[in-house]
Length: 456
Figure (spheres, helix red, strand yellow):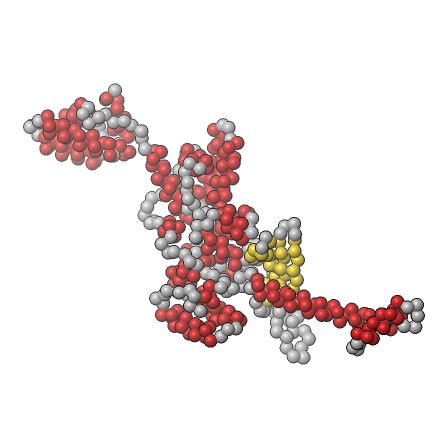
């Protein structure tokens, strides 16, 4: 039943009149009018949610069901659901679900909205992730979803991995994405445990990233030697330039990203270009350090750890958990009074680096350089003019040694001098012995002890 505005106004007057005869009819009309008003209000709210979904990159078949804001925690909770397209003369098409697929609920930190953090809540199909937190199945999910056992989305993981590869400070990354230290540490810890084939995969931009549209419109020049990718780019670019429809361009961008996903192992340089990361970056070089180079972890009671915590030694690390741990232990070091307290402060840092040494090659290289300076024996050798060097040439049993190069040098010098031992030749030979010992003192500790005792 449809009523005009005049009829509704008249009935409103009757509703407030004392006449009992019009009360039942008035109640029915007022209820129907309220229902029509609520339907329009729901339609307006649905339009606003559609705009919000577009801004957040939540595309079909996903749609926003409701939004709740937590002002105290500064969190915008977005509840989404997967909707099927309605069919004509079918009332229950949206309620139809596949009973064979197991459903599981999850909540994932998505992106920053102003001063607030957006958290997406959804129910997804329980895929077989093979017990791996970052498996290849996970990358097939949309950017606003994630692993059910984690509380961060694919988009947030990719953004933090890219920021970390570019060398951004951990505090800056946390403020930029509205992520607390606990969540940031969890994400970086999962990234560091990735196998080698997936380390480039996590840098691949999500399907809602504007870089795909920029590549299609030739605003970002992608240099590649892969012929299939060049042919696909030519085809997709011609199609993207012919249309101005955002949804069609997004579909073309998804096709391009699917090609990258299918050929991820051969797209390393192209992915780095999409993320604006220089392949010659020092951080990437450190990850590919030569395996033949011997790297050791300093001892648990080494003074180097105190220098690292106090800031005297700068590891220049890109590892966010390591930087956070050093900052935390620096506060504890200020409170430490005894040597036992300082050893307790060192222990967590030593254990962390020992456990994650495979992903901290760059930091260990710096520590090893400092370790060589610390372990360098502070011994003052006698001057080259001292008589001890000539005594060594004269008496081969004066300083016993198992150092093969040292013994060969002495043998060569003695044979060169022979019976004609002029002061100039003998002095030159003694200086060569002094130079050899000075250069190789690190491997001649026993010889140095005998030498110093002979000088004394």
